[in-house]
Image 1 (cartoon, helix red, strand yellow):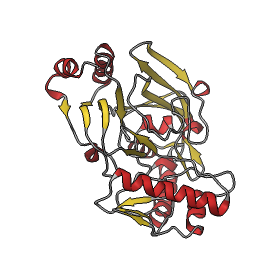
Image 2: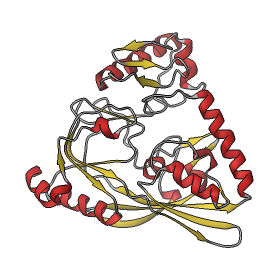
Image 3: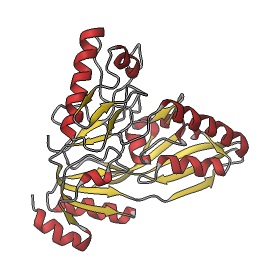
Length: 311
């Protein structure tokens, strides 16, 4: 792993030891060996190629939602994907194609579609995270999912180059896809995995005022049910029978605190960083929740957020 050579190749835009707590919605995360921001797809591809050439594993960070980064940070190169261009093209009288780069905020793409009278993404109007992350985890809310309108994605890897994958080839399921690494207690490390460059959605024409009303209803429901503060979103996936929050609440864990991390009193499937939480605090709280729910209800809770970095 030639970190020095990679830093020299990347130039001034590469930063040593950048704290990833500055780039996650949790406000938690240790340093990256190297950190760089890619603002165009050309820059993103170039960073990945250079990492490949210098045999430095890379980790692509989007909006920083849905991840818990270890206190020791991430070994290798962290590339923050800030590629956010969005293009809307008419397919026919009723359908439009919305092509969004993977670093675009999912909620920004949804709001742009709504403003142009394009239906299908209203559920995402306040969903945190990027388009790339939304595809990887087949994000969804209020009965809508990425897979409902996704036509496909452009995927790139330094080893195999660039290719188009249709939705049927992406293995989209409940909070998963072919890009989703199976949960591992050791956490997700940097590597040389393929990366989504852009995604294309097929959206139908509908009166913008109706879409805005629907989006406003979703915003209100989210504000009423979900807590404010530093979090990574829903911590656990829904089980076959019950929402995770229902089980956690009935296990008596609302308000349970370890260090600066607390189970939200408003919604038990959220862990909030009160401002001083470490990744270890959150990890211990996660394990306590899993152990308690397993003991009380004989049910295993599977993580929805990803554990990332050097644990």
